[in-house]
Amino acid sequence: MKQIAIISGKGGTGKTTLSASLSYLFQNPVMSDCDVDASNLHLLLSPVELKQSYEYYGGKKAEIDYEKCTNCGICKDKCRFDAIDFQQGRYVINEYACEGCKLCVLTCPEKAIKLVENLAGYYYESKSPKGVLVHGDLNPGEETSGGLVAEIRKKSFSVGESLKKDVIIIDGAPGIGCPATSSVAGVNYAIIVTEPTLSGFHDLQRAVETLKKMRVKFGVVINKFDLNEFVSSSLEEWCFSENIDFLGKIPFDEMVNLATREAKPIILYEDSISSKYIKSIYQKILQILFNK
Image 1 (spheres, rainbow, N blue to C red):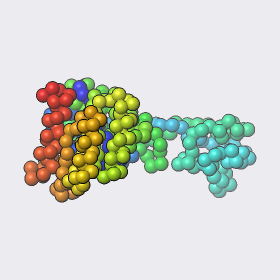
Image 2: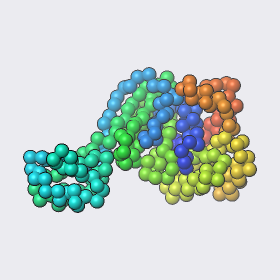
Image 3: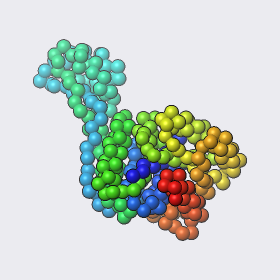
């Protein structure tokens, strides 16, 4: 079973569009949406049944035992994150500001504060027309997205093994932070989707540097290449000069808007000009990973 992660140096490059299309092109996949801060792969894959829901606990938050609390205010004075407020005659924890640093626990003279496990989000196993989709959502303001990504990948792998799937398609998180590195750790292949802009070029270089340090094999796709063919050519030449797998280019396609509105992968539209380019990219992936 191969794991393929589709990532991008920045958001909005078309990563999810390509992920959904590859999910339909591969014959026996598990789909995994690891962009937990803005999960949207399910919008294109249209799950028809929620098979299982799981709670995700990430980090800890402070909690006050008011039977012990004497309202001395030491915790508020010591808190470096302004996460303790005085409301209606007592001190309360602002769960969105609390970082779980434990300073209030250590300085409370009455031992009235403790850290408790924090419910940071949920992840799901759903059934879609194409197969199993594992996806999740981080609660607003939470910062443990890398941990939730790891849980989603674990579930995707166990589902893939039990159902004897051939491939896991991972719609990874953008950027180079914790959720992005958690999306690609240990995968067989990563696909970086970029765009022909100077900022896209810059973010591509950062993503490439990160993947090289993680020793993950990868290739590059340029989306909407015809919006700036000069920068697109520069991107392509740079990939060849750096000995990077260049998987192909995808043109700007107005039908992508239609596909998004109708909640379908663009690959299902025969009149789409980008569809044949995506199929060509798929063939290159098969050749690299399966020698087909």
